Amino acid sequence: MDSTYVFTENAISDFGVSAVIFDTEKIAMNGLAVGGWKPLGSTHTVTKAEKNIIYEIDGTPALDLFLNYFGNIKYNAPTSEGLVTIAGQYPLQLMNEDGSSYMRSLIIYDQENRALIAAGKIKAGTKFRFCPPPEFSVVYDTINSFKEFAKNAPDLDAIVMVSCKGRHTSFGPILEDEVRSIYEIWEAPMAGFLSYGEIGNTAQSGVCEFHNVTCSLVGLKEL
Image (cartoon, rainbow, N blue to C red; front, side, top):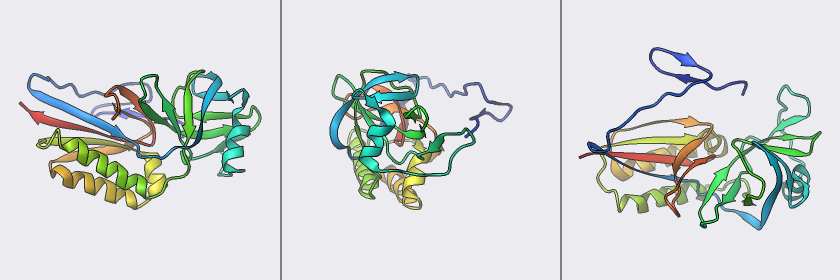
């Protein structure tokens, strides 16, 4: 995890953006991002954070509170001394003021500073709930959410799916069932990839967010 890259057929960059732009007078776009994760325990508040580093939760060192929930988790350490990867197995369900929520992965913890490092920005004051390691029901709940979405978008010409690499890490071969089952809802041409972060509309409010450990789908329909 030293760097990430953006590429096209003609160029590659570690600091860039690649985009496809649709004329919505000709192509209708509709989408949904679904995590399916089940939160655990009470609601907490991030009380000290900087960018994607969480230093305190409820006034307590973030790592100490995390380990109180899940125990002394050990994975292979990255090259930087004192950092241990969590591999996105224990994400946070972040809560918006309007009642909607989205997922944020914890990917590394910092033993020296007793901090948690997330795969995206988190502001002080954000309320959240911890999520335990996933059960296979997360996949089936995600599939059912897209079946409900299909009731309002029954006829799509093409689908773009972006799913988190963390879901692949968590579910292994079961992720193939998720992709196949979602394809079978519409049986339209579908393309996509695994990512470190997903952009999509939340189910509760339709607000576009930056997600982790989530399956984000965009349906395209020619007008």
